[in-house]
Image 1: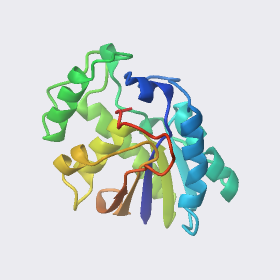
Image 2: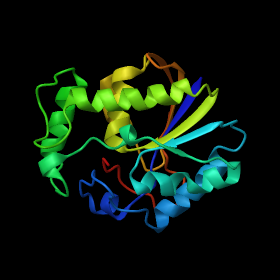
Image 3: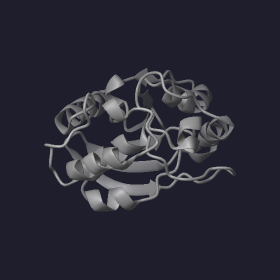
Amino acid sequence: MRLHLVRHGRTPSNVEQVLDTTFPGAGLDAVGVAQAEALVRRFDGVPLEGLFVSDLPRTQQTISPLAAARGLEPTVLPGLREIQAGDEELSRDYGPYISVLRNWAVGDGRAAMPNGDSRASFFSRYDEAVATIGAAGHEHALLVSHGAALRMWVGATASGLDPGQAAHQVMGNTAVIVLEGEPGDWHFVSWDSGYDVAGSDGDPID
């Protein structure tokens, strides 16, 4: 199957560079809405059969125009939620969060955010969510998730792209990553940074 992984549209928390990982989180701002609407054009001609989102409303707002255009009902999978920041939630200092993620990227699961995700808990829930998508039997499926989660999961899971590359690739809001294969055997195809709407700026994590 071909799996399209999309980061949600821009939110005020992205602009203000605030860690925003828990429910419900900030919704899309005006630029984020425009980015969501632009996905209809960006996926023109792609035969999508299934749409999947996390349980944070910004992913559901992002998929809404494309879902309406295709007449598809998105499936909510809580496992696609952002890596939880725990005690660092709503911090403007990304340092401790990024430090933990760097350790995870090289396979060191000892570091964790206090009261947030561990490496094992994150990969368990994300792998389970993607396995659910794979079991649906679609040839082309699309999921909308979150910046840190997508970097971490794709970098650790897909052949053809190592964690270091994933960590340094630009991931704007509505960036699109394409993988081919099946759960347990994913191959990297492409990475579109997502900067196609005037007003997009920065590369905040969540």
